[in-house]
Image 1 (cartoon, rainbow, N blue to C red):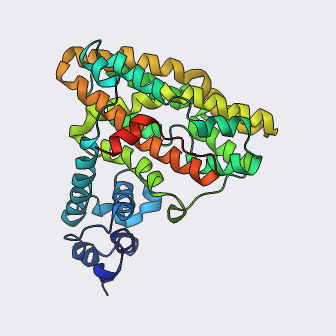
Image 2: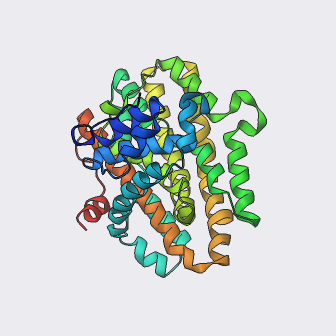
Length: 335
């Protein structure tokens, strides 16, 4: 029997998730012409779709065969079209735009990374937050670069020369340079076990957290957005190191267990180098080969900056830290 869901009374994400869970092609096709009920439903829907592209097969089961089903593709394109319209409406903040058209994309990327490199919420976590709040924050944050290894793997497809080599080097570092115990996801598992990190369900996360998670899927599942993805991943590398050092300060202040340290310690050490190498060896040769990609790369970095800043602002408000939104985010959202 087909699981037919009435979309008018059910959020699209819930209906789609149920149809996929029951591997019900009739119910999936019924949803093909429907739109999400607002931005939160849109991001939740997209996360369900992106899981079909990248989640472990053991968690998807037979639903994975619907990855490119026409109804799924129609839902994906409809949700992404509206989101991309919003992202493209964002204005690059000064002086990033001026640097992009003056000194070039590398200077623009550095300026963008510097504008909100150390958000107030990270400083508060480092200096004042009680230990339970530190754990809560890390549960929402998910690491400075959650899923970064798979995103790098997707981003390198079709690249060549120095850019491909740089992403390969970066990915191998994510893989612990061949040492299983040093794989970054393994280090995060150790962290989670050591501090009893809770798993925050999607319905308990702010909409900005869903958008932050979904951005990687947006970029990774749309081949034409590879330049924007190159910029977004580069910005993560440029900003992660200093933020991880603040988390380490919180660990030292609160007396965190030993297994909590390695994940953030390795990022604090290597990500500043990764950020510089990403600029010099991935972005620079890509732009040299095709100068027309420069603005798109920087714009992708700004998209990551904007969604991440919105998430951190919501986290700060929820934790009682106050308004930490960088001025360029407020300006952009007003566009």
